[in-house]
Length: 475
Image 1 (cartoon, rainbow, N blue to C red):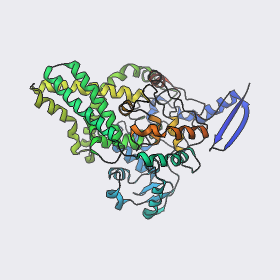
Image 2 (tube, rainbow, N blue to C red; image 1 turned 90 degrees about the vertical axis):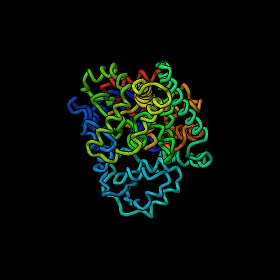
Image 3 (cartoon, rainbow, N blue to C red; image 1 turned 90 degrees about the horizontal axis):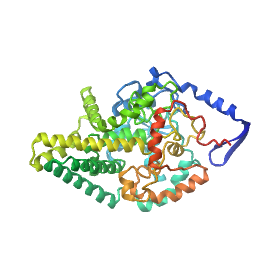
Image 4 (cartoon, helix red, strand yellow; image 1 turned 180 degrees about the horizontal axis):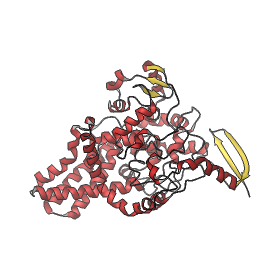
C-alpha cells in the first residue's frame, strides 16, 4: 500500500513523497529508538528533539529543584556568566535594577541562554534594538535548545500580527483581574475563619476551593512585572518566585521537553515520557496514587524548599516563606478557637486546595496521547510557536467566561504564546492566531476536560512513542 507524506518546512515550501506506509513507520521507529531506555536509566533518558543532544545536567538529581535546574542550565548553556540571546552574548549587569519586569528575571537567568524568554516576553519588536548596547561578543557553539525563531516562521509572523492589538490592550494586569483576585482573597480568608469558628469542615472545603481559585488566578500575576498580587500564590505553600523559574522559565519555554522541570520533577513518581521499558507499576500504579500526590503536593513543595535551604541554598531563605502561615494566624486570632483547632482546619483547607490544584494542573492542558511529549517524533519545523501548540491543548467548556479563564489556566495555548498578556485579554488575539494557523496549515484542536482527564492517565500508561510527527499527513 502506498501513502502520501507531505513534509512542510516554513510556510511556503513543501515536498511530496510517495512511499510505503510500513517503510515510513519503520524509519521513524528507528530514529527514535534511542530514547527508549531501561527503567534503571529513566532519569537520564535521551531526547527525540534536535538541539537537545544530551540529557540536561539537572536531571541527574533525584530531587529536581529550581535551584538545581538553573545550576544545570548554566552548565549546559556555557555562556561564561553572561546572558545569551540567539548567537550573541550580552552583559545586562547594569540593567538588572532598571528592568521593567523586575530584577528577578535577569538575576535568575544570569549565565544562561534566555532566547526563548526574551522572544516570548517582549512583544514589541523594537525591544531587540536595545540589545546592541549590551552586546559583548558572539556565542560559541550551538544553542542547547530545540527551537528556532525565523523571521518568516510561525511565531515571528504571529507576533507581528499581534503587536498592534497588544498595543491597544497592553500586557499588564487588567482592572477586572485585580478586582476579581482581591475579592477571592478576602472571601477565602473570611470563609476560612468562619469554618474554624464553627468547626465546619464543609465550610473548610469551600475555603480550600476558594483558595485554589485565588492561587490559580495569582498565577496570572507572577508572569507579569513585580506586583503584590503575585504573592497570593504563596498561600499555596509554593513560592511565586520559585514558580517564575520552574513554570515561567522552564515549563513555559520548553513544554513537554526534557528541559521542562514540571514534566521531569520526579520521573520515579510520574512518568509521562513514552519509554519502552517503563515499569508496570509506574504506568498503572500512578493512576491510583496520583490523588494522594495531588493532596500532598503543596506540603511536599514546602518541604522541598526547606530541604533546599538546609542543603545550603540560602537564596531560598526569603521573607516570603512566612506567607503560607498568614491564614493560620488569622484563623487562630479571629475564630476564638484553640490553636490546635485552627491548625487542623488550616491543614484541611490547604489539602483541599492542593488536591484541586494538582488535579487541574496535571489534567488540564498538557498530557494526552495526542499531545507531543519528548520521545515522540517531533515536527520538522522547530519553530518556537509550533512547539508550544504541539505540547498544549485547550479545554473548551469555559472558553468564553473570562473569570473562569482566569482561575482555571484557561486559553492555555495563547497563554503559552503570549505569557505576559493578562488572561482576560487573551481572547483578543484569537483572530490573528487562527489566521496564522490557517496560513501555516497548523491544526488547532481543543479538547474537553473529560478527554484531557482520561488522556492524562493514558499518557502515564503509554510506553510507545508517537511515530507520526505533528506536521506529517499520512492517508
